[in-house]
Image (cartoon, rainbow, N blue to C red):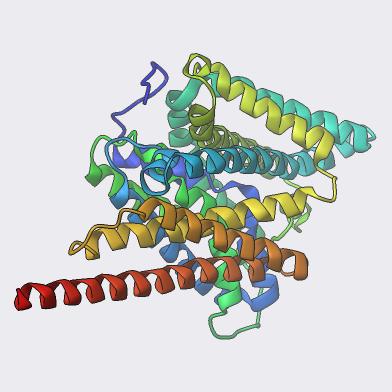
Length: 416
């Protein structure tokens, strides 16, 4: 892996926790408000805690399996082989470009609403404003990981202070809906940041030590629980609702909210660009690995927002990419566990089997997505389940055949 001047390999736990803690983004934060509206505030917060602890466990496994300073794609290449790494690099680039464009929409809605009180706005102005935000973030990304670090380290306490202030300003509405933990609600929390969890090694390769990486992961998890619980407590599930809430006519509140929204947008989209760059480094020749790649990725995300965001197939592509990464998560974690457990025999087809299980799960999720287009969690569950079941079947056959061969070999030796 080429090391360039834009990379910083001496980050402590607070810097790592701040970077990944602030890279939740407004859409993922609003998951808390959506769950509170559908299930009740208490169930939402329980689901947020459980979902993020599961993501922490997945992240722990990803960090434990990462050798040296591998990016996410480096892990894929190690466990699934080069062909799978190339395919997943394309998926990762496409997925994070899509998420880059999605992140543009929330702040744009809020700023258009604020502008509407000053000048008349229309869809063209909204698109231009969103494109301007995307272009601005693309230029900032030229600063690489060092700029991302400082933007997020400053942004982390800023976002936290804003949320405390907003809770006291808006108050906590009474929500009498109660209930037990919902697997569906937990799945939504998982899906909101699962791609980021799988790609953690792309950022945590910059850790000063393993200790800093693991402690940074814990700080990130606590931050995500707090940030998602914030929207559950104030019952906000749409970006513009933060401005439209009662008691929000204060100029200070509007300015502080605008800073929070803009800073959060910059944090998440700088990180989206950097996540995508791991795939870029795999499929693009090394001579194009300069800082310009970040700006190119950001511009592609901006163009996607400008011209393709309303295309009917964009949501399906985003879901297919998310499901692929979810199946990849199970593949990587199971293959890592098998390396620890299965030490009594060789597994010459290990990478092929890993690739097969990932691909089978992904195809199953796509098939389910076509059959149940309105149920996003269903395709995720089917894909992950299919990957795991195929692994169990193959492992059963491998162990049985190996044991049978050993029995026959031992019997022959005894006779001779």
